[in-house]
Length: 318
Image (tube, rainbow, N blue to C red; front, side, top):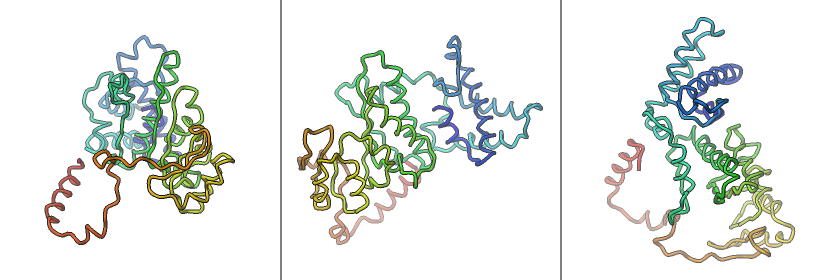
């Protein structure tokens, strides 16, 4: 995580207090990174340098800084950060990011696993963030997106493989100005959309509400695959992003059937209406709508189902 992503997770204050807390966190985080032996002999180290550090070191540094007499402020900002850090360390929902366990330099292994380098017949990584706490979901996606982009920049001299980052429910991460919350994920994905092709990084956006996407990102989409849309506002946004020759297809978008779509842009030579092949049932994603009429007529086994669900719910695991 870089400094901006640390701020999103660890800082709870607003306004002038947030800037004060950010200055304290930057100073302490830099000291924690400098304690790692990887920092020796690397020249200039910044607060954004991807050098691992120990959470215990960061907590100790914050505590020590709070005790100094010449710190120029009271101890409340230090205690705010320290309290939030302690909360995160003991919260099981954050264990995948802040376990507090002694760590080494796992960055190369993590990148190899996420980017499938080598692919070994499994070229796709699926990152499921549905179980991640909602307040840090955007931060997790921002870290992944920034890792992809930064890796592509620093590997420009290498013979690297192109990477396609596909974002399901993309309007959550790159919302329009009306719904924007100022998180870093929108800036990261917008930069990939605008500059990524130069470095072999592509962005795929999947959304049911294209009108909620940032217009600047939608305009960068070279190929548009439009499935059935009934909302006039969504249709207007798709029409604005389509090339001129494909807009005649727009009238048929509300009438498309399941597995039908209209494809236009760089991916096809001419705009076409396409029907996807029907997959075998065992290969389909678990995204089918439940049959309400059938399930409402069935009965039996509800008590056991509720017990199993409550157990998974309490354990926060599937």
